[in-house]
Image (tube, rainbow, N blue to C red; front, side, top):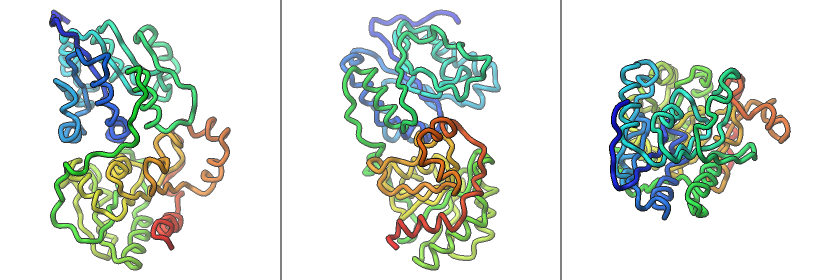
Length: 362
């Protein structure tokens, strides 16, 4: 891949290119790593997923000297883009590379680790969910130091906390996923009382029926007078349009009209978030917005429900038969560690309304 830059100052690269929820559960540890005595003399670079670049630039950019942003779709499909990005990484001449991702992927973050050719390569023993049986062992000798923690299930925030201590050699002092809300600008045009609703998802398998959303939202309006503020990306338009068409009470449609930072501001002032299992629940937790979320049991206790110490008003609703199984730790370990195919539609609207009542103190 050509020449490598030479510098008297050692360089460190930190990779975090997974999705917004993963980043929100990790971002408060970035500064602990970059300010650790072991790396104070390093020039520190960061590679991130451009889909949440605005969050990084608002809250975290001061932690590093340089950042590079990856378009994951182009990285997968455009071989020229991929080659140029990996060549650029190689030419930086990194001494150390840190990959704090548990669900590593040979096609994305691990390919960057390999291209960097750093002397020291630190990561986690990989979660095998995204690894095909014939691919097992592909990462042998890819890392020089691996963090291993056998306890499962373990909420991702706490795994990140343990990994940070492993990397820095100092016990992590991070206590939550909160962002500094003083940096948020109020979003104009919203009513005094509103609930944020996220009916869409990038994954069609995670959709909760429009009719269920309408029943829960109607209950919130009829009993409490809340306006629904419907949010999502432009890719969620099918689902947000369906809700707005079927819902007969006051609604504000912000689909495709907000940045992630604006979304944090909207959630910060909201009474509640009603959502399927998406990154929105992690954004809400980071600004103290209560959550009533629809889940199917996938990756139970890794991403949801939030422990009360991190988000005291986080209500995760599961299908009845799965909720019974989740009380058995042995079943959780054997069946719910990875993604399962249970339809989200099996969570009834009545169950979500019951969770709303608990939140409202009824």
